[in-house]
Image (cartoon, rainbow, N blue to C red; front, side, top):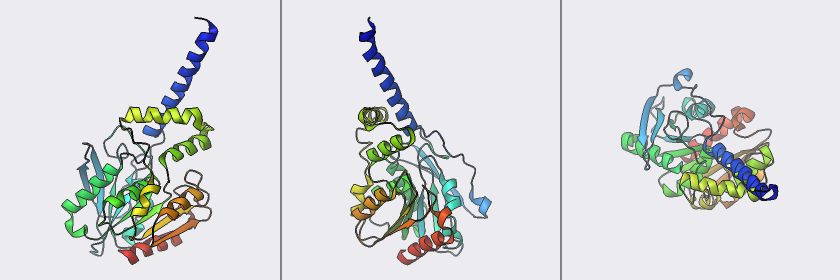
Length: 293
């Protein structure tokens, strides 16, 4: 085989190798947060639970009861590469000062839940459904008035899941992305300067093949969010967020129906709005749920 014949084959192999590595990054986040945060560290009473998804995975979670006996419950959805403990340390004020029951769970392949891969929302809606079903079956007295809090991937899952659950009253979503493919393209360019053509196109095709779901990258919250109204929606975004930039979150907000509100937090990076805004964050989020639940 001559050099000029071998060169295209070599280039094709290199491109496929890079794209395969790209799918590994999506399916297996390299910086998974360890489970090191638990409710007892904040003096919170809680109950461990597990439930099964429609595709047979075991999802693990915590139910943290209200200290005041309040029946209102919030379903808490964490971000990609994080876990329920990471979200707990940012949001336990909703139980401590807001008085809500909180239902935290780990998405598939995160924290204590089963699963070999994460699809950044494409299949995580099944985990959302399973956690909600557990609440309704095992805590029916706390399932009559439910709101949702979602962060990053959890925010995107919330946007897509709410239209399928009309009994859910309202939602706070921080840093949702609008389109799955756009998120992958933007992340690859921002972090590694990888161009869309041909690498991202090939990566997404390989992703569909590896997951076994031809629609896994058709997960687009912007197409679902218009079906949440007339339930209230509060959208939050960090002004310094490069992964879910303000203009992308604004597009998601614009696609939603009324009633809705948006808060662009000055100086906040991705998933750091509470850290940047402090007490104002707690006041606004607690106030929203208190008003609409």
